[in-house]
Length: 144
Image (cartoon, rainbow, N blue to C red; front, side, top):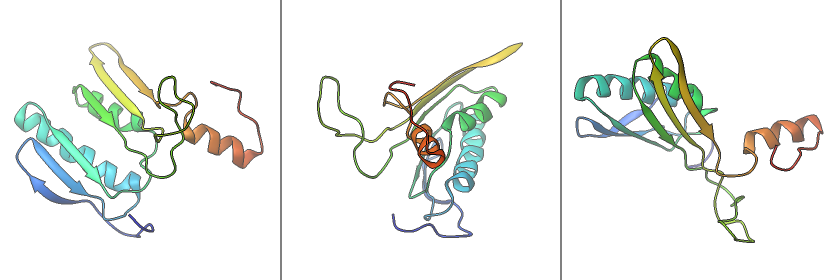
């Protein structure tokens, strides 16, 4: 993917109605993810469902935030993130790291109640939590 590029926006590389692929053009993840989410909400309302793929984007932040946008629009959503870089997670019963933390998020809106939101990494500890602790010079308890 390369280095972060300033002032970049998501561009559509394939549009098949309810299925759209976007290129983040190495832009800020939060900017291009916002654009992808707005398009996804629009497409879901237009077609009854939508599948949006965003590639070539830097860190998008907490994916639960994007799911909350869908819930606010009355939509169920499922979000997957593929984390690039060195493997940090061992497979079940494995001893060596083979995967990234690859977060997953699912949200279900509920009338008159906050949405049911599941937002988690596939690792015991979210990578973002370890980075914050590292910058503060703090230890993270196992499975915190």
